[in-house]
Length: 378
Length: 215
Image 1: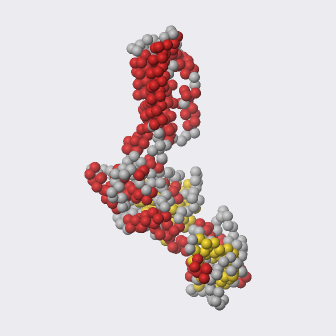
Image 2: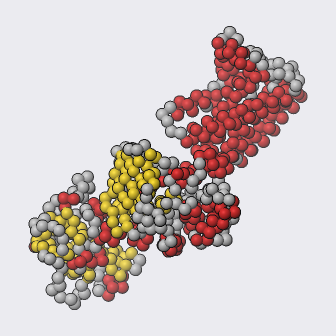
């Protein structure tokens, strides 16, 4: 049985790192964050390809790095499997030889058999004698994955493995990886900056920004309930509205917006009077028909500030009448056409109470570019 | 010994000595990052810009039996280095150092660092990484290095004349023979030697141009 991978890294230069994460066996943990946030550095440090001034990397009872104890194992001794962003296949070796090289300490026949087995598991049978240069992006990714797994690693590290393939191939590879990992009882770390990739593949998520881990947890928990406004922004949330806790009840909370507008949300830990940021995900927004009257709960009124067609959807920015803030959401194009929604159309939307998430205003990082002021636009 | 044989013997000694040196120095300069790197590179590549006669002059001073270095060298080789074949080989090695190092450095620098890292995380030791990954991907650099050193040694004139002199059968190389023949108005011999060197140099350049490290 493989054990958890625990990582704790800290350094001030050359780049700031303050990372603390745990990945359990069989779990896929996505390291997500904007470009340059330090995701790949974390992965490379785990693999032993980069060193940090202070840190600990453990896989079960194997200590790979412990700066205090003076332990820093070489990549060869860490038993990690790693898929590089551009695969880093050995260009002069055949597909079979690429995988075979990662299998050591066995007789030649056994190495060949094992390499063929891994290639079969990654759907590469029949291409064993081809050179990487003659393979498609998806095929190279499969070879890189087979090579990483052929070593029977204690942890699998995937460094943006889908960034170099087209959308269609990517979907196919997602499916193959999901099938493959069902039989992999090892911690898997996936570096990506694609939130939809995380939602489709990963069990948990660790958000990294400027070298710091900001939040780790189950994917939907982190996405639906970011701890800070900064995290909400980094996860792509746009509908963040300033509010004040008016009343706390057992099962719900009433928030006061500008101009005495009220919104009901789920129960929260904030005291009445506390200033908060309300996160309203687009999935919690329902557009009212023109015929529907205005008596619904959690109703917000306004007009369409702009509406842009994006494929079969209409991306809408709705200006609210009583709050100096816009709501952004998408509607199926045919629905928008049926309701005659275009720029300037008056609109009413209701907000599903369970979809609302409150964030403390004081949790906003001082260095954040979106400094909070009372009742100002977020 | 004919000038051809002296030249080939000198070129072989120089090439065989410089191949491992060029490999190690080229690899080191390609991968290592340190503050004094530009200085080290400048010293190594100095023979590329320095007139050969200047190098020859300084080597004459260093090899001179009147100096400490010359005395030590005489004891080491059992004879003074000036106007001898061993002295010529040492001078040739120093002059050809950049021609040995630079193609190797370029070949190793062109090797994607991720490929070496992939070998390490696949469990390959540095030696096995060198054998299975680096060597097969940089052999063109080695070929270019050997070809450049060999052909450049064949054509070397200034340093050879100053350090080796013009001793028939010992230090008289093809390029010295061409100079001698022209001085003696023996244009036919000079033409024959020149055409031989021209053909070889052209062939060497074709080999170097074909050994593109891009894979």
